Image (cartoon, rainbow, N blue to C red):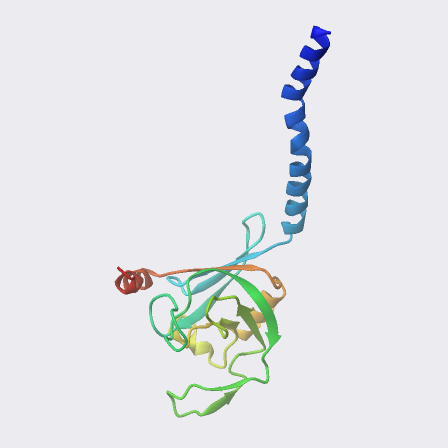
Length: 187
């Protein structure tokens, strides 16, 4: 009888913990299979570039971009800063018929200002931040937007084919952004 109890205890100590790994393994395997076709967008403000990587870390595309006029992390509507951090694609919207008046030029209302699509990002406290095309390809590589990320319209179409709602978007600060951010931190 003592050997049976000893054997049962040994089984509980040695085998039972491994059985607990079965649900964890199934969950992990399901998560990986769901993410195998997942891309990640990384925007490097220092380089004025947008990169798309696949699940294995391969670069699928890169594109020159334009950023918000002002340095630093977006804090409020109208500060003309591009946000920094980790965000998700909230929606992908047709914007080919959208117009905008920048009010700081003499052009007035401009048609097609956002290009064919607007990729809306989930930015806490903000509603209108996204990645979109441009009416002015010469603006790429500069700080000219009101906070959004602009890119060439043909490259935006390529980007749309590689992402979906929920795709992660990481925006990293430039050295000047870091300098400004450190001055504006609450002490």
